[in-house]
Structure formats: C-alpha cells, structure tokens
Length: 334
Image (cartoon, rainbow, N blue to C red; front, side):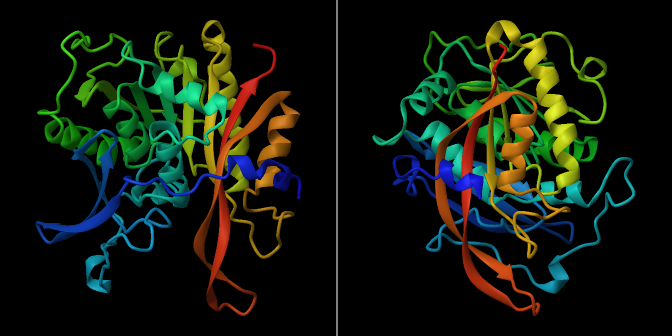
C-alpha cells in the first residue's frame, strides 16, 4: 500500500473550527431539492448555497444538520437520456467528502499547514485573481467557494451538469453575495477569459462544458486554457475515468507552461472488496501509479480520516472509516 507513505502525521488535518455546513430541503413545483450550505471565512454571516438532487455523502460532520428525503422525494432522473450522460455524471448532482477537505485546506488556514499549502492559500486569496479551472465541478461547490474568497474560476463538467446545476448555482450565489463587502481597489470588471462571468463575492466565475475525451483546443480558448491551478474533487471513482482526466490535465499543463501550473486533487480512498487491486474502481495506489507513469511529481498537502458506510462481503452495510487526501500534482518538466 504505497499510499500510506503519504499519511505523514504532520500533514493530518483535523476539522476546521468555525467552518460549518448544513443541508435544508426546498420544494418547488412538486420537486424536492437539497440545499447544501457552508459559511465563508472571515465573513461568517455570508453563506454559499448549492441546489443538489440528493443529500451529500460524507461532507457533513456528525453534529451538522443533514437533509433526509423520503422515497416520494426522489424523482426519476430527468437527464437520463442526455447525450454523453452516464452513471458517473449523475453522481455530480450531490456533494462528496473530498469537496469539504479541499475547501477547508485551500481557504481556512491552520497553524500546522505545510509551507506549500500556505503558499497556495495565499494564491487563492490573491486580490489580482488567481486563474483556476475546475474539472468535474458537479454542482459547483469548490469552484464557487474559491471565487467567493477572491479567485477567478472557470468551472467545467458535462453539458448536463453545467446547464442543470452549475449555471443556476452561480446565479444563486451571485445574488446571495451581492451585498458582500469588497475592497474598493479590487477590480470589479469581469476578466475577459471568463465569458459571461458572474461576480461571486470577491472573485469571478463562469462555467463551460468540457469533455475529457476530446481535445481541449476544440472546447476552450487559448486564454481559458492558460491557468495557475487545475483543481478537482472526487472525480475519478471509476478506473476508466483516470486516463481521460489525466490526458486533460496534461494538455492544460502544456498550455499553461508559462504559469508553472499545478493540479490540486482531493480523493477519498474507496477501495472495493477486492482492495487495492480493484480493476473497476480507482484506488489511491492507482492514482499514484498513474502519476508516476506520466513522469509527474505528487505531494500530499493534507489528509483526514472520515466516517463512512461500507458494504461487506455479505452485503451488510456497517460503519467504518476511510481516508481522504488533498494531493498536489506537478509536471516535472515544467
């Protein structure tokens, strides 16, 4: 288990004091939605909100209020027949464990954070607007949150998720944070590379579809493909998705060489019953091997043990624990 070497004691990150999440239920036109909410650092009266189709999985601490849906609240997936839509795409309509740790690690500093993580935290809050692209943004939690604290973010995912989740959640948070205090000298004009960008708190954000199986040159402008950070959270639970994700990251490394960009990835260990040798599901060791195969470097910025429900060989679901990591991946040649 090569991943255990990345579980250094000094990189373990406990839950952040002051950061709170919760879920509410919202009903409109006989449709039930889960509204995932979390507060902003240093602006705790301000909360960002995200309309989801299901309750989150592993994103709430035990004392935080979660939504509970009845069988009648679950609707038939209206996007089931959309082009390019899949089971992997359907998981994007809820919030997952890795999103929480990634938000905390990048925006809520702790004294014990490593030097490199502190550098990234400064970049994220940079008043000049650090350029970030998020891959597999889902409902848009991480990218929207980073925008709210000062970054300029392009959120990407399948067309179905952009049109039915991300766009509406950006509009929701633009409205919610419209009265948030912003430094007068902070540029209030939308960056040109964020087409139809929206002001989200202290930063800007926009969304566009991005298919990892197609060349980015056919989907992004040159300006959009030249960024400072690539981020992703819980996006490759299926092993079949790994190559296309890393092909996209490699292409972005090439178009962003002058920026010396890096890829910040949160990933929860979900090794199946066949363990680290799983063929169908992505394992931590599988991620590490794929990084090495491309000649890239990888560093663990933070990790945490989380409570999970796990199915055993008899089919029974039991309480268990797992680890979630925040890795920084770099192209060694850049």
